Length: 418
Image (cartoon, rainbow, N blue to C red; front, top):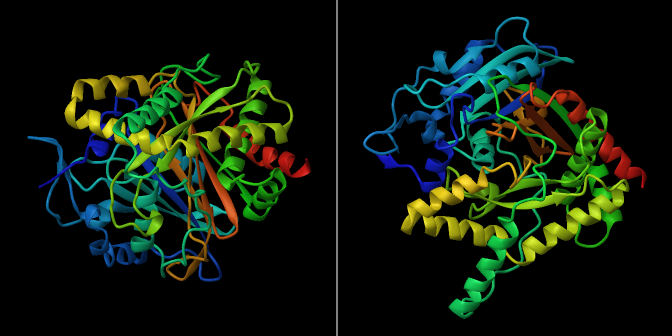
């Protein structure tokens, strides 16, 4: 039995009757002249590579403590299934993110859509978040799905500045940590445009833009601006449009930005969940798209300079180890809708072309579960020369998920025109 890490246990703690805790990768593949492969061909492809991803052969047990079992036989027909006839890609994602995985089996499944529109077939690969974060799941995709390993990530987060030297005094180090916690855990002035108790329905939407356009925006904005800054500015523009359309206040919104703590990014061999985060205020009331981007960059630069993500990760890890009650209080604080409005992640994907069963992959989208009182989540992932966005929402609380996704594309175009 392999005990769950504190990070993984915290993921389990987010579950509720309406929150399933899944993450999902959607792989849209060119059908070509041969058409989509058969379900048996997909099953054989995945089964032949399962040994390369041991976690996908382990079950979760909760007693006497949360742990992973030794590898178990995998019923490939139960885990790799055809999607219902006539379902489109958005519907398949929404259904996958609404349902529950069988706790008696390894916590993943894969549905095959023989037709996903526009000459494509698709894989909807659902994994419980307790198994993997975004970086881990991208590495597993290479091990489990792609015909050949890709060259590397299409984009990468801007490197954090080097940590202060170890000879810094304990007092100085403590002061730095206190400053980071103060910046990251301060409540927002207002809870933001999205909120309410999340229900059981989900709605999914897609957006994409070229990395060439994003790099043009990045270069024009000035030294130090990153692709991730552009992603956040595009989300800010999309939220501004959504708020204007729905008559919501343009008072700004704080977003939670996951930061990977894996040792070496996509090539790291430590699995599971190793994420910290930053909170970034998006200036929704700012009408100038270039000014919105500059404001996002200033906030991100400050947090990177002070190593806020590392400080928060270390502090919460220590609390979990030495003062679990305080860790529980911190966990409740971080779920408060006044702390942040929505989660926006950006995971680097393959830099070179990838294929599945000889068919080139055209689109790669990422989706992650929303949270109680946080009814929207946006996940970006790069593939070759594109950045692709998955938007997941509770449609009862956030109507117009497709409008929000379209706003991302419109915001990128707006930034290009500045």
